[in-house]
Image 1 (cartoon, rainbow, N blue to C red):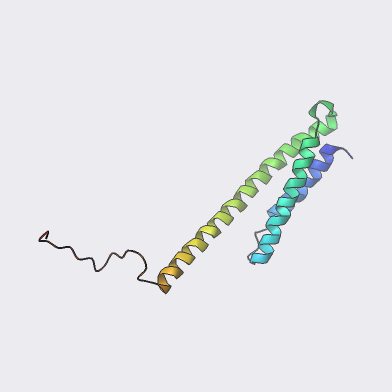
Image 2 (spheres, rainbow, N blue to C red):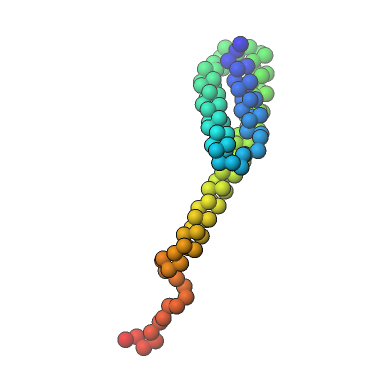
Length: 120
């Protein structure tokens, strides 16, 4: 099988995996991210093996389809990345709120500040 066909099949499998919704369970999410990362690494190796000078016409047409699929894949991976980034922001905010709830007197407060008018 040609390298371009292998690359197309690997990209299609990765797109099918990325098209699934991001799992809610933390362990499943970690496995999902690890699988996507592993498939990206395998795909990267295949891309390095493609020699564009020795492609047949069929491989060139498959390459054009591959470019379209790659654009959709990149868009979906960007959505996944944005979703993970939003989740991390939520976790940081919850952690900060929890810390403030547990120790409300830690850090500066806006109430109870006394200003001396006399300037002594």
